Length: 489
Image (cartoon, rainbow, N blue to C red; front, top):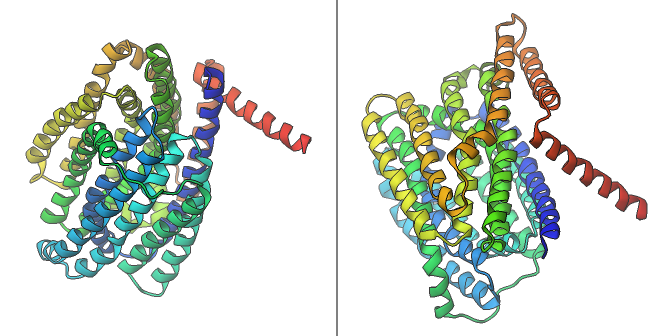
């Protein structure tokens, strides 16, 4: 595949992946707003505790060998089938471990409901084992259109299940039913739309070869997941379930936006960079483009959300979630920096430096854990705020190797994000001023959203931002090609 064809294929898959994430997150967010009005914060605190343990075990399924399949230059059916059967065994073992540990988890947090809830929601681990290799196949072959249909089918169906069960008074089981149904339908649709099937073959030697790369990615992801979940574990133990719910809700809203942008770029960028792992200059150019494009979108979204946080929470979630606003603003700032982290890490992984990636994770998490220990007894707000300091430290750690690997210097990286950051600050300041209007919050929110979009787009056009022109040309080309296909038909 030549450079021009790879670029077109990358953009097409990025659009499909972004559409999939946007569709899923829009539905998920709308449902979460409805459910947040029905269910009490304590219910979300309990489900957050369960999710922590499942997400830690999920790393063993989602990371490592899946990434190794994508990164390997000549992965074939023997590689994919070997990983598939290995994953199935691992999933059942992890589920049995979680099943047995659930009473101890319930006793530790003093919540009897956690035992049956963990055992039911834990079934998503088994479902994920079936889907994981299919996902790796889709990512490696840039078939992200398949994700669009599987994700949307599961998300919409789960939305109906969650809302109906919540209205019928099922409480925490509404959230569990929603998650379980989503995972099941997502897996079934992906299974029937992707042609790859496991063959009756298995190679321990191939598995070992993949594991030599993948175990470092797995351990890195495990360290990262445990570190971020550690805050929630501490909050759930030292403070109330309501405190944990407010913390999670503040994280959830900016995370929805970040997931759309960052996951889209992350999932497409890694396989694309892996195809160019022997061409340093092309790797640098693609990494640079990813940072420019993602931060151009992410900065205004996060700063705009920070500025409109009061009216947004009041309108969508009501006053009972007002305590989540400070956390929302903290996470907006943290997530705004995420695309730079992702692009730098993907470049390191694509080159095959999984050992270096692991070292970076250890360095970052040792610093992060020391921060947690220093502030855990102060307050939940102090725990959340410590993430800002950690994020800056992690950013410089992730950027450092690419000075040598890609020749991508600190100065270049900050120059690439400076225009978007500066204009976003101006836009955010203007948006925040409207919060002082003495009119209904719904009108304030509408004015803030419309004004923010207009100011940012107008500013980008007047100042001739290179990334703005780049995105405009991509959208224009995509629309023209789509129209051309309709005319031919």
